[in-house]
Length: 228
Image 1 (spheres, rainbow, N blue to C red):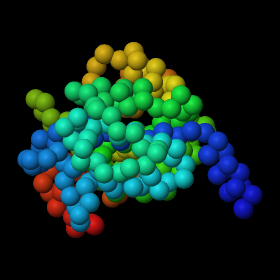
Image 2: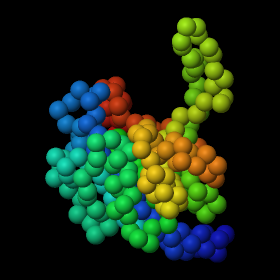
Image 3: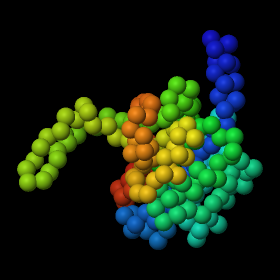
Image 4: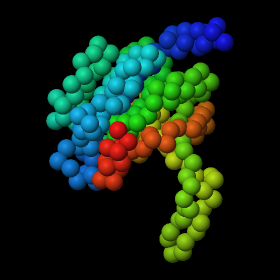
C-alpha cells in the first residue's frame, strides 16, 4: 500500500495543477455593503477559507484569485504561488481571464467559487486523481426534496436523476481553455460551458461534500457562522 500511495503522490506532483478562485461577483442577494466573499466569519474573510485549503494542499502548484479590482487590496495572502488579478463583468469572463493567467506548463485546472468556503482537501485530491482518466471531474450531491417543473401545469421530476452541482470543478487545461476561447455566452458554471462546446467530453461526476454549499442568502451566511 505504501508503494501505491507513493506512486500516486509522485504522479500527482509531476502534473502542474492550477487553482482558480473566482471572487469577482458582487453578491447582491446577500444585501451587504461588501461582496459576500469578503464578509468575515470568525475574523477571517469567506474567501480566506478557500485560499487556505488550496494553499495547504501539496498537489496545488499555483493559485489564481480573480477579484473585482476594487476589492483586490482586501486579500492579504502573500505567497509566491498566489497570483491576484482583476476579473471581468461576468462569471464566464472572469474564468477565462483566470485561465489565461495559468502557468504555461499547466495540465489540470481547478475552478472554484469563493463563496463556497467549506470544501476539504480530500475533495481536491479525489478530483485530481480522476483527472488521470477524464477530461473533467465534477463534484455533485443528491437532492432529497421533491422537484417540480412549473409552467401552465405542475410536472414532477424524478429526483433520482437530479443532482446538485458543486465547485471546485476539475478540467484538463487545454480542453477548458479551448472551450472558453470559442465561447460567446455567459454560463453559470464551467462544466455547462464545456459541454456546450463539446458534448462528447469525457467527464466524471463524483460525490462532493454536504458542507460545501454556496453562501448566497442571509440564511446561508448565518449557517456558515454556526458551522465555524
